[in-house]
Image 1: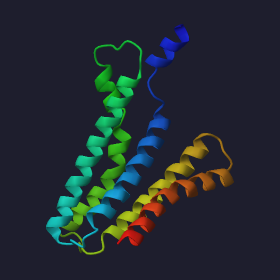
Image 2: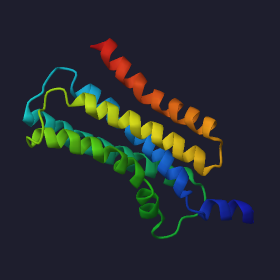
Image 3: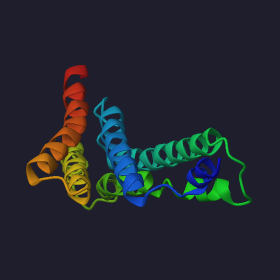
Image 4: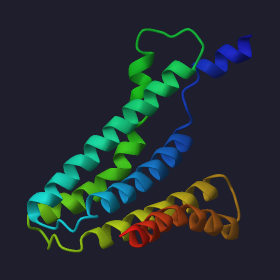
Length: 168
């Protein structure tokens, strides 16, 4: 019984949260960019709209995931546990911020809004590879295994890009 209570009250491992939230957020960003650019709207206004929707979706996903964790833990909760559980979802939101900046930057005129989805895809695939590599190295895996883990993570983003190309 004491082991169960200790496990339930222990905060989630930060490395686990960064990996999960980072991968989830990067795949979410790829998917949202693919979905929002499907119809070829490439004006500055549409890119600002895309950035806003990416942030709204990331926040809603983080809230839903945090809430699911909170209600799934069958242990008694203390006063601020719900807020702590929601705060643990910061890596998911942080992972979409670079893509939101790319989209918003195109909307603000920092660079052309047409074709900005390709750098966004490349950024997220790179983030996925890096998360897999770094996490495997944190776990003292060999370099070959770490590179393989990074490649598998990156494939999640590649699947979204390929699906986007096929669906269009």
